[in-house]
Length: 88
Image (cartoon, rainbow, N blue to C red; front, side, top):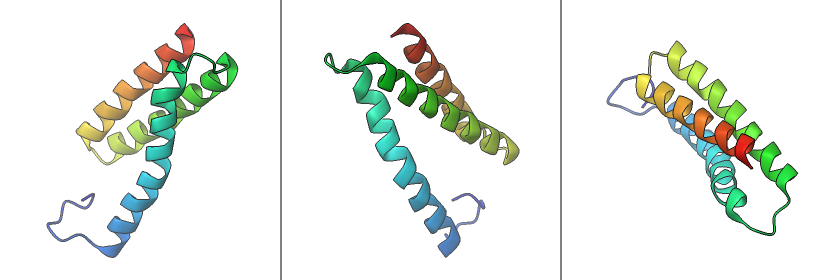
C-alpha cells in the first residue's frame, strides 16, 4: 500500500483501517449534512472546516511521501469542503 511493496505489512493494514475509521464517518457527515434542510448552519460549517483541515493534513502527508494522487485528492477535497462551508 504505502510502502510501494507488493506485500502488505500488518502495520500498513492497521494504518489503512485507522484512516478509514476517521475518514468514512467524517466524509459521510460532510457530504450529507449541508443538504439537510432542517440542519443548523453553524454545526455544518464547523464540520466542513474540520473536514477541510483534515484534508490539508492529508495533502501535506501525501506530498511528503510523494504520493501525488493522495495529495491531489486531498487538495480537491479541501477546495470542496472550504467552498461549501463558505457558501452556506
